[in-house]
Image: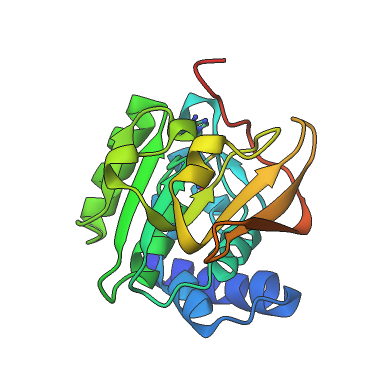
Length: 218
Ligand code: SAH
């Protein structure tokens, strides 16, 4: 079996056993995760674990998120394909690639990463995989991307003690923001929705564990 056939098979098993069997229903999310090659986003030494049910270490002491978390966060965003989306925490770029596929209908994707090396390598990988239109910026995403705001969706893939005010400000009316909230040891994935009257409501989804969102260098 060629390496690409082997990875395609592992990807099918991941989608069936880790995602569908655990409640991910959105067909577009499942189809996307069947097509994005996670093996291209992990370190060479982890290539045989690319489809395991776990987060894996990447450069700069960060992690590529567990596939189930990527699927759940993507599903929770309820994308139709035409939204302006901000992702905070590009990391490997895997979640970014999933979002880029889900936005193929003319949305726009902005992704911020505080480690310039990760931002650069993620951008290169995204281009190699044909996701040429993603805007990747090295910088503190807890401050958002004011020049590109407002955003219909914001996804934060690092954990914060509370939702950064700048991100809520940059969320469009009718928009949704998904973020893990809590102390460093364990968090809850939460959705903040900005209603048309500018009030914000929030729903707690599930327990999770992410690397910390570093605000202002600390
Ligand atoms: N979605 C990524 C997850 C990476 S882990 C993936 O699956 O690969 C979270 C990332 O958030 C890390 O790369 C970390 O460097 C980044 N990060 C932490 N604080 C940040 C901040 N304030 N602004 C931008 N990125 C941040």
